[in-house]
Length: 579
Image 1: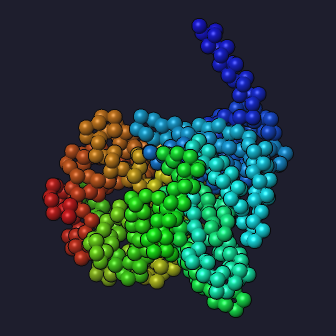
Image 2 (image 1 turned 135 degrees about the vertical axis):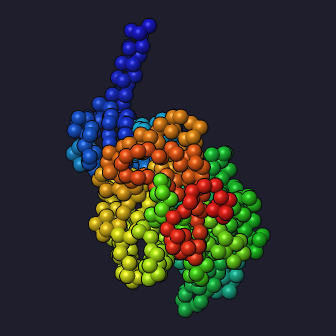
Image 3 (image 1 turned 180 degrees about the horizontal axis):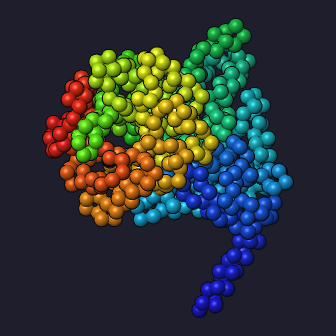
C-alpha cells in the first residue's frame, strides 16, 4: 500500500516537472518569503536554491508593475474572510525575456483563521496572450471611431467571464447609447453626427483605464468592459464619470452640440449565468435608464440600483460634509490598566449628518476607503487633532499622546503624506512626538512588500507607531523591531472571547510576554469587564494600557477636557460610559 502511494506521488511529481506548471508556497507574513518552488522553474532559467529565501525573489521573477499587482493580491489574504483568486502577470525568464503567466493563489490558515502560508500554481499562458494581442490588433475595425467592434467585445467578454469563474477579478458591463442622437443627424447632418461619435469615443477612452475595453457596437451604441472591480459601486462610479463627460458640450465644426447618454450596468457575480445573459441584462438595464428619464444609469435590478446609488450618494455627501465642517472628533481615553491614569486619547471621527444624525466610522469609513475620500478625511482628522491638542496645551491639560488611525490609501503616496503631515503639525505648532499612528498588520504587509518607507519616516520625525487589531491576522513579531513599534493593540475580538476560550487567553499571554521581551507596550482594546481587565494584569515589564467602555467610551472634546483635568478614570461598569 505504502509502495503504491509512493509511486503515485512520484508519478504526480513527474507530471508537474514535465509540465509548464510551477507550484510555489509563500510564508504568510509581510515580506511573503518564498519557501517552496517546484523544480521545473529551471525550464525558465532559474535555480530554485537561488530563489528560496531570497528577499528579492519577486523582483527576479516579475515585471515591476506586476510585482505591485501581485503584492496587492496576496496582502488581501491577510484579512480573515479573503479567498484566493487568479491574476495574470508578466514574468521574466532567467535570460530577461518576458512571458505571461496565470497565477492561481489560495490562503492556508490556522484554526483561528490567520494566514500561515500562501499556496499557488503558475501556468505559462504566453501563447494564449499572444492570440489575445492579435485579436486586440484586429479589434480596431470600427472604421469611424477606432474602437473595438461588437465581435471583439463579445470575444473579450467571454474570456473575462471565464477568468472570473476561475477566481479571477470580477468585472462589469456598461451598455450605453446616446439620447436623441437622431435629432443631431436630422438637424446638423450625418457628417456632424459622425464627428460627434468620434468625440464620444475619445471621451469614453479618457474615462476608462488601460485594462478596460471600449467598443462601438453599432450606430450610437457603445459598451465598456470594466475589468478588476472590487464591488458593484465601482461600476456606478464609472457610469457617473461617463455621464458627466458626455453631457459636457461638444464643439464640432463651430457647432455647440449638447447630448446625454443612458447606461445599463450588469456586474459579474458568482451566480452570473453566462456572458450572453450578462449582456442581455445590461441591455435591459439600459432600457430601464431610458424609461426613467434618460441621462442616468441603471443596474439590471432595482435592489442593486438602490444599493449602489446609496453608496455613490453617500460618498458625494461625505466630500461635501468635509467641506461643510459637518465632521467632529471624539476622543476615547487610553488608561494605565493598574491605576486608571489617562495616558493618551484616541481620536475617532464622527459625522453629524444633517439628515441621518450622528454617524459612527463604520457607517461611512468603508465607503471613504472605496472611493478615495479617505485621503481628504484623513487630512481633516489629523488637522483637527492638531488644533485640539494646541488648545489643550494652552489649557495645561494636554495628553501625552493622541492616537490617529491611518489607512493604506493615505500612506501609498509617502512623499505627499509626509509633507502634508509635517506642514499641518507646523501650522498648529505641535510636535509629532505627541502623536501615535495606528496601522493594521495588513497595511504593514503592503508597505513591506512595496518597500514603502513611510513608517520609518514617521519614526524619524518623532512620531510613534502602533499595530492595531493585533492578533486577528498573522501576528508576526519579526517586523516589530524593524518598524520600531511602540504598542501592540490587542484586538477587541480576541479580548472579548478570551475569558471563555482558554486557547485565546493563552495567545494573549504569549503576546504580552513576547512584547515585553522586545520592550513594546501592550494596549488592550475593548475592555468592558473586570474579568477582561484581569487578563492583562501580569507582573513585570512595561505596565499595560487599555481602552474600552469599562473606563470610558468615546466622548466629545468638551467631555475629554474634563477627563484630562481629572487625570484618572475609576474603572468599573457604568452605562453612561458607553454613551
